Amino acid sequence: MRHQHHVIIYLLVILCTCHTISTAQIEYTIRGELAAKSSSVVYLAKKDVVVSAMENVSLAHDSSEIKDGQYSMSGTIPEVDEYCLFLNDVRGWRTLILANSHYEISGSEDSFWRAKINSDFEEESLRAEFNQSLATIITKLNASSDSAGVARKSGDQEKVQFFRNINRMMSDSMENYISSFIQLHPKNYTSLFAFSRLLSTTSNLTLDSKQALYELFPDSLKNHSRGREYYYELYELEANTDLGSKAIQFSLPNQKGQVVSSESFPDKYILLEFWASWCAPCRVRNKQMISVYLENRDILEIIGISLDTDRVKWIKAIKEDQLPWQNLSDLKGSAAGVVKNYGVKVLPTNFLLNQEGLIVGKNLNPLELNKYFQDIKTKK
View 1 (cartoon, one colour):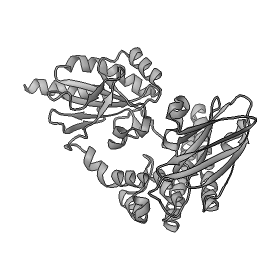
View 2 (cartoon, rainbow, N blue to C red):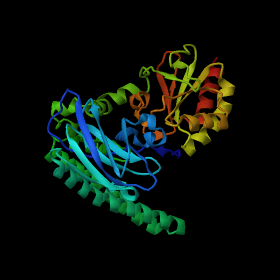
View 3 (spheres, rainbow, N blue to C red):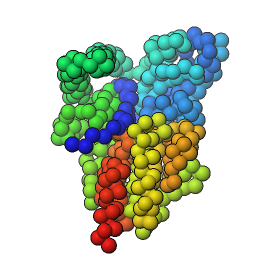
View 4 (cartoon, one colour):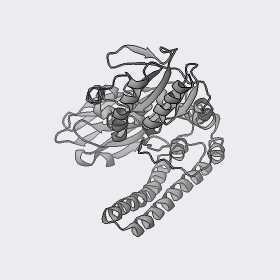
């Protein structure tokens, strides 16, 4: 078995509830008191881009200056969704569900993630109950991971295996809890957003089990943007990314701002290499791929698709690694359309396309890729 190092992309989820989905714009008002020493601004960002927004505040949806220990903001969003409040100069965030509601969120800078939320948002008690139960399981899950790490450093393999077994049990317990909750509350947003945890790369649930849970959601939740993403992953992703499938085409800007299409190289094989500047295994593979690319560039083009959100760090990595191929990114991280279309959840990940645009290889390491093209040249 070939062992490869990857970085898992964790899609952080904050869970919430509501009965119905409206097609009208959702209006919100948020205000509160904040004991802040160094922070001067409160930002609001969608949950799936909050980490990116903390590096690049232009990705934030709204913001408010903190004046005399108070802040306020109001606006509209297209649908009820998961959002986070965060402070400048402070790591961490406070999660909430933005609905057609008014929110009073107050706390202190040093523990903003625990800021108290008062809202007229319905079913808040159910959401809080779910999160509390889930937090208990996650605490045990993290504790077992930490203990396994300590045992590994001490060289005690017996303890490592012991704590790994506990970790697996806690993971199963979490999946069972979420599955049971969805079955009991299929009409709530809490269930819709919790479902994403069951689609992680570590899930033990079968595809049939995941599809059965998804089918419990009413059409109103299936038609939510998150529901549509779930449908794609459950019913279409495999067919769209399997060997022999026609690759999904896309266009993205390069580091100079020029838009490049995946259809720009009709006479070459194309390797779509998903990576990020912060992914150590990606940086190692980048350097290993250079010799393969230079040796086969007459028939091969590599398109590096970065999941970076910080333009400066992305360009710096390109220069440091001296990458000679096409480098593209819309700086949306894991929220990028091309990332979702190809179902990328770990880095590095790659797809090899032939001249007809068909997927002919997946997750090839440099040695495998080079052998692939050497075989082609030998046959000629």
